[in-house]
Length: 114
Length: 113
Image 1 (cartoon, each protein chain N blue to C red):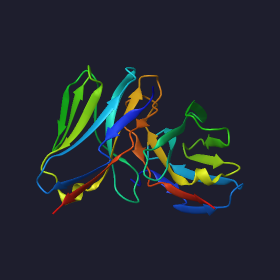
Image 2: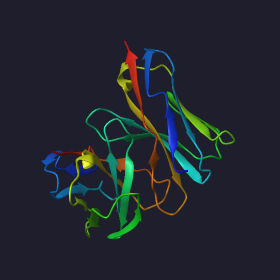
Image 3: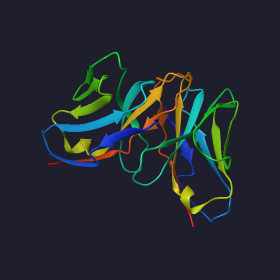
Image 4: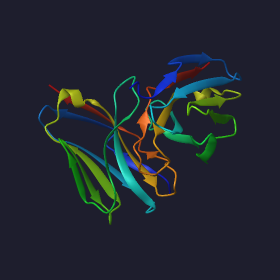
């Protein structure tokens, strides 16, 4: 079992550009959540996808958008990148959307905006 | 108030000692409290979790103590080992039908040999 896999592992983008991050959930999982982890901070919830729809969203602007595919994999898109978007982006998968289901995290994508 | 406050920010413990990390919350709607362990370059991994109807939960060397009236919970690592050196996050989630984890700011634990 490969667990949650994210790609790419590292990425450098220029301010104003757009970026797409990818996530494959753990085998058998149908729910994907995205988190942003700034350096030295705890992860912050961006949004959650289930049945190819955004089910819940954290306090992030519309520049952050996502998608879930029929095979449960997911993408996170960030438009008009700002320097403050530099962070580790984590994908978490779970079986179902229950508030107390175990969330398995990937190793993250380190995004640097210059 | 959807915050979880975590302390200390960093902790140094000798091998064999007890590591204690504390968290506090305000929102009584929080109903699930997991602890995550994160090694450098890795994503967080679930260690142990507790519901507010339980005052203590133990798994191996890891114990969560929960004080519902004080709205505080803590992680105790018994017989701390150098391999436990990592960053630990407490988190909380409300029973809204969907999981949205609210994380603390993390505690960097160093267990000296």
